[in-house]
Image 1 (cartoon, rainbow, N blue to C red):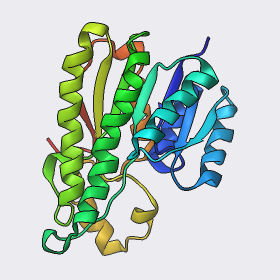
Image 2 (image 1 turned 90 degrees about the vertical axis):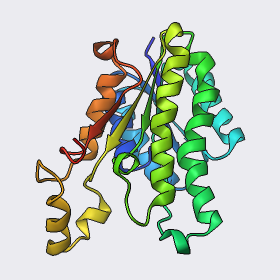
Image 3 (image 1 turned 135 degrees about the vertical axis):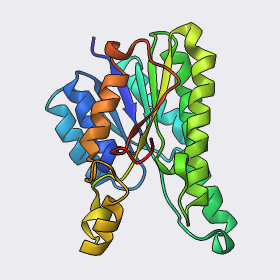
Length: 242
C-alpha cells in the first residue's frame, strides 16, 4: 500500500512542487488548497501521473477545516504517513501602520495553522512512525523590515518544530523545518534589474532558489535516508544565513 502525504497550500509554488515530488516518490497526495480550485486540480493531474491523489479545500486557520483535511486522507487512502505544513500568507506593513487584523491573519494561518494541522494529524502519524515537515522562512531567522507579523510567525514555526520533535521522538515521529530564502516566483520575475541585483548581492551563491530545491529537501526529510534527523531547521537560501 502506498504511503500517504498531506501538503497544505499545494495549489502553486513551493507547495505544488512538493506535492508533485512526493507523488513521484510514490505517495498518495492530499492536495490542499484554500482559494484556487483550478490550480489545485492542475496539480492533482500532475500527481495522478504517478500515484492517485485527491484535492481538498480547507483554510488551515480554521480548526474544523484542519480536521476535514486530515479526515480526507483517512477516508481516501486509509492512513497518513507525512504532513507538510506549507500553507502561508503575508500581509506586509510597517509596525506603526500594521493593523491587528493584519497581524492576526498571518499568525493564524502560518503558525496556528501549523499547530492545528499537526495536532489533527498526530494520532495517525504515531501509528506509522510518520514525519512532519514545516515550511518556515529565512525571515524567521534574520527578520525583515515590514514583516514583523510574518517573521514572528515563521520564527514561531521553528520553535514549534523543536518542541514537538522532543514530544514525539519516543513514538518515532520526526519533525523538521525548512527555511527557504529567495525562491523564484511571480514576484521575483517582476523585479527590475536593479532590484534583482540588490537581492542577489545578499546571496553568496548569487542566484535565486527554485521551488524544486525546497521540494527535494522535503523528499529527503520524509524518507528513510533522514531517519536520524529530527528537530532541525535547514536553510534552502543559497547561504544567506550562515
